[in-house]
Image 1 (cartoon, rainbow, N blue to C red):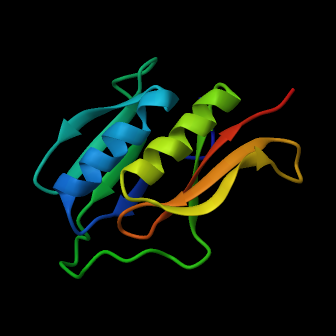
Image 2 (cartoon, rainbow, N blue to C red):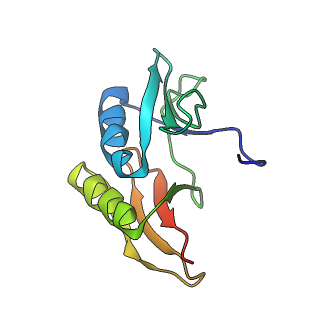
Length: 128
């Protein structure tokens, strides 16, 4: 259990497209959609489906959703293969490549993309 984060939210201007995108890229990470409302879509890990940890949301102020420069959300993957699949599926579903799968300077395995709204996201597999 994380002692730092309760959940993460990213803004979206098109729930239908964004939800379809995240539904697809989350398969190799064992994350699934748990709830959909008019304001947000919530996701949780298959091991803890009642614990919503990631949301796509419409901004509460009614303004268009934008991404933050220097902001990134990192998702844990169990294997390098899951990271590779995350990256592949993301690109097939309209993401922009921000870094091919590979080992980075900390010794862990990552892949980076921008989602349909420009949010930078990564999948990370911790190397032993």
